[in-house]
Length: 460
Ligand code: TYD
Ligand code: MG
Image (cartoon, rainbow, N blue to C red; front, side, top):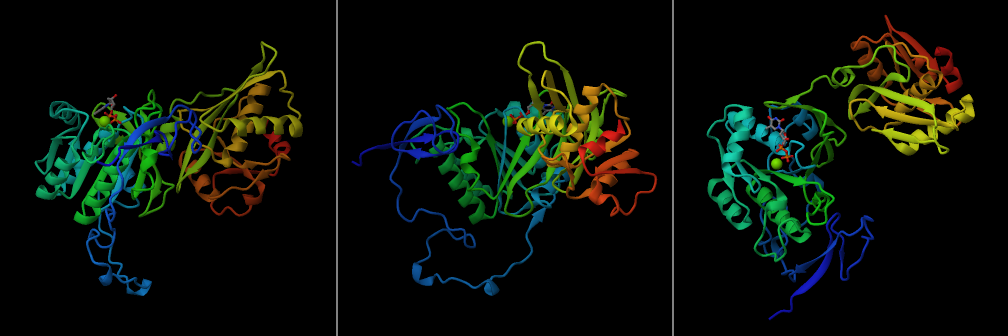
């Protein structure tokens, strides 16, 4: 008999090594290497992605094609009836695609997919929802919160991949939901469910099913830092589309972010709110993010960030206060800590703000996580406002990148940002000087173009 071979896999990124290591050399996580059994790969077992025929064609019949010989046809897309999801998918669900929906446990992945299943089954699509995590009763309890369901949607509690494959072959559903990949197991692989080799081999089988039977498959993957469950990052390169569901578990809104999409743009986000009866779309995130903003408080200003193609207004808060112990604290919530430190240094050097003996905290209100350089000007103004204890008028929006010399540089999509601010009733817009004269429709708006931080000080 063949000797059983083992190897060590990083449970975070899938890195394979013949010996154990404390730190993964690929993703630098500690204590993530776990020993798993590996079977020698049988030859010719790779799935072919051609037109759905798996690798049985003899090599004589295979010939490469020129681009002009490939017929394109219309991509077969279906409406999920969730606008925010359609947007992230690039205009609907593509037939035969494999989509990974990742996120922390409890963030709402199962709820989202159940709602997708309901909407699409109402449209007449046949859908199979396979759960390895919850019993049929638990699913029904959740479904009762969401609403009415038609019989086009079928449920199955199963974790054995070969059973799942035979059910799909028999029932031929158009859409399959696998909840979650960490609970599924493939009998051909000896290691435990949730291990890197299981997750990878199971996904490979699902990929073959999706392409050969032209079924759209959603895979749910939990992201956890614990060593026992393989992070879905291992599968990112295998699937067509990767969506991450994120958000503060204490806040009600959730953001669905596309990080990979073979059928569309990846920088779109969808915004949802978790309600009593499931997830609701948030059509106007700016309004949502600005809800509950304090009036006339120092250290607060509204800025505009672009997420994908969509402008989002949100409040930046800063708090600068005297350090009670020798070493000043700096903290950034929701944005890049190093960037905030850099901006503080620029403020000290170029504007002369003496903050060496001050603690400074910067927070993006609402729990959003954004990194765009266009936030710089807003962060600086919020810090100045708190330092000087002078509130900025609540009808002001400011955006622009700040350079090391304190210069305010132009950013992309200025027009859209201004329009969004106008739409929400803001009156004064502070933006990079370079763009001031290029704006077209500024009626009713007070546009203040600034070329540097010193220049921006005049608003105080
Ligand atoms: P769930 O979809 O089970 O998360 P995941 O599949 O990502 O682990 O969502 C779980 C949370 O959502 C749970 O804390 C309850 C909450 N929830 C609502 O607030 N409203 C609802 O209608 C539903 C179904 C769940
Ligand atoms: Mg779930």
